[in-house]
Each structure stands twice: as structure tokens, then as C-alpha cells.
Length: 216
Image (tube, one colour):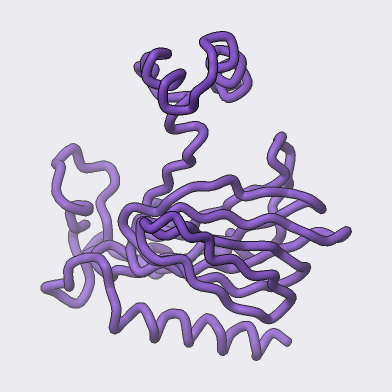
């Protein structure tokens, strides 16, 4: 089983190496210097003399995360913020763990296409096109599904056991915007009159949703 999972990882990397969303690198490596205060499109390169093997290593996806929230899912990223060596390489991964019935709420990745491989469990997944068409599928262990760049999508565990996926992205830092949290939990807040008109609900309903999505 481990060999099969590794083979899927290799396939993910191969796909994204020829379909990168990020700009191409202009040198062999550009390990991110996350301590630098200089702002560029990405991160400033660390000095070559300071680069180590640990800049290209991360073990945080090996085990399921502890799920302890109201939506019933946890995303563990393996992007440039966790693996500095990914800087300029245009790829990253994440692991998503779901409780039974757990949901990865509707969200977008503005800088990347996402491809998932189901490690365990069963999921209902889908994305919505700009023509407002829902493309959805029920997945089981070993299945793969793709979410096009920038489109709203979701995953929900439809089984009675925990589920997990590995997700690949063609960006070192794909970014995530959760639709509900973005609209009802931004700082400063989106004006109530905008939300009441957009969702055709009253101010009381808006405030109720905001209170539930407010940072704890």
C-alpha cells in the first residue's frame, strides 16, 4: 500500500511540474528566507551557505490530524511556509482529515488547481463553474478528483468512519478563501446592508451568522 501511495505522489508531482501556476524558477534552488522583511512575489532566497536538507523536508502529513472543530475537518498544509525549499518550485501538498460527516466547507484556491487522492474513507465532493453548474462525485479509497483553479469547491465525509485525502497544488502557496468566513468574518467587516441584500436575509440573521463565525 505504501508503494502505491508513493506512486500517486510521484504522479502528482509530475503533473504539476509541467503545469505550474507559479512563475518558473531562474536558478536551481531558492530556499525561502521567511525571516526577511523584503516583500517580493514569493520569498527572498536564503544564502546558499545557510541551506540545509531540512529546508526540503517535512513529516507533518504522516499521521491524521486531531479534528476538534464544528465543521469536522482539519487541513494540514505542506507549502512553502512549512517547506522553505518549495520557494519558486510551483508545487505543494496538504492533508485533509475528516470526522464522519465532516465537511471541508465551500472555498477557493485563487492561485492553484487542486487534485486529491483519497487515502481512506468515502467523500462527496464537488465544484461550481462560473456558469453556476455543480460538478459533483462520490469518491472512495484510491479515487482521484480535480478542482479547477479559482472555482468554489467542497468535500464532505459521507461515511461512518474517518476519511483522509492528500491534495496536490500547482503553487507553492495556493491560498484559501472560505466563502462563509470570508464574507461573514472579515476584518473590517463587510457592511450588513451588503450581506442582507446579497443573501436576501435580515440584519438579525447576518449578525447571527457573524457571531458563529467570529474567531474564538
